Length: 332
Image 1: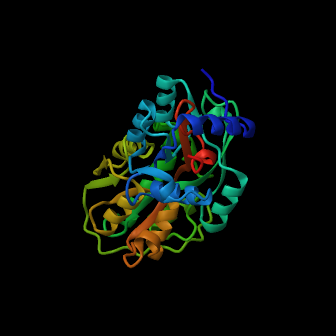
Image 2: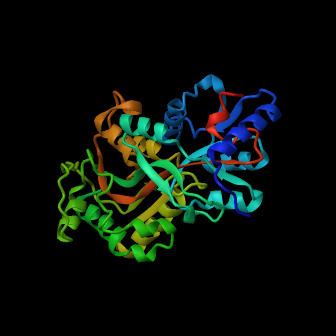
Image 3: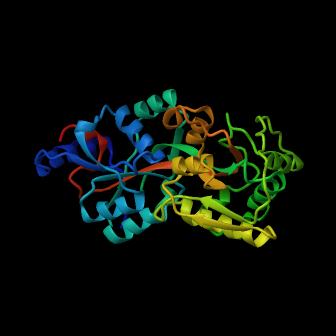
């Protein structure tokens, strides 16, 4: 069953109808786990629309859990940062048949671009079978970060080499972005691991990033990779990357663990509890510079290994929900 993106005319009609059906109740919006990158971006989008905390009920749910709420009608809008396509969204459409993906206005995208590192991104209508039109949103890049106190030069080299040279062993849809063409995307203002730099230069890439300084590393065989929630992209993709490393780097074992993604992974790297972590490039930059959630506690032992895939902000609802667009939230 195909659903068409709401046009301006449809939004006007929907707003009027929803205002009557909702009985004046506030929208229930899943903005992501506490202190997560998803929550920061969700609030950035809502603020750009002029929507304040008093205009909605915030649910601090992981995206996969939030979609369960969208399906049963307890959550009106859920916001997540994932690759394309997201299996959890396809599953929601399969079970509900009336998924709506919200498109950001030009004005909102321009506001966000002027005040953040996120950039305009178009979700092609071919990304999901239920879309009849392209969706405008914003995106960043997912990157792999390494602990410079536990990942030595040779291991950094092998991690990058296997990620790109053996990417065909990874079946996840996002593996199509594991190419040298995309390898340095999202690396702006980050420090690169010297081993990864050596690999890229061997491949003929020009690396202009500052090089991270490695600590006094004791050889080890067991490594922990922080990913994200099982309902998102990080966890399954990270699991496949870890398996590929295990199959191609002798004498090393990589275990992927479920986390709240970027910020938690960076904090655990800083605290010496994790060897590798997947992160959106924006919080990775904040971590290095000691800004935003890392103010006063910078992460000075995290180094860039490589880009993984573009991180796309995806905002979903159901046409049957009492609120299924940003334009009518304040009206309620």
